[in-house]
Length: 196
Image (cartoon, rainbow, N blue to C red; front, side):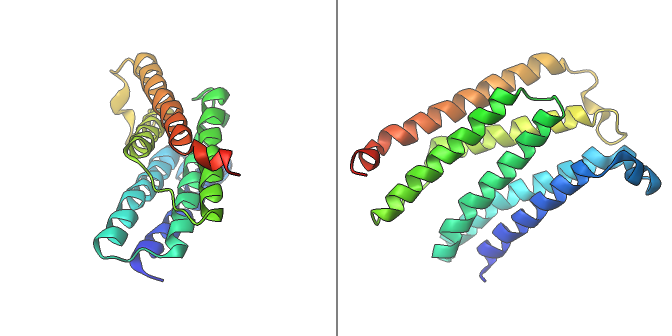
């Protein structure tokens, strides 16, 4: 397994760690004196996982290490990370459910289009709007995770910021980019749907 694919699999492992940390009962964390650092630890796992999302593709293209396995697993792991963080943020009442449903629906739409393309011997690569979508989702998730952990000693830097106003603005931007990028992807590849 080459380096980009190792990074991708590492992202899957970090996603599992992120979910585990966010799911551990408070009593267990308290017994290990980690309750005050739960969100800090989760954010570190999320941010490192997000960084590997940018690194694996860059390294694969730069060193010509693109593989069929990488083409399959990289977008799949991206969707698992995105779905995991937004489902948890919805569960914690940080983000409305309809936002999470919109984000996950867009991911299913694009995956479906890629499967159709693959059946026709074509490869649909990510476009610049897709990269903006990913970046906006990482920013939104990071912001709301920090808000969740703002009572932790390491994350109390947002106390002076108007959190609701910034949070609502970030959600609007992220949701708009998500919808526009999904629509753009669909319209650019509508011939795949017509010929299926």
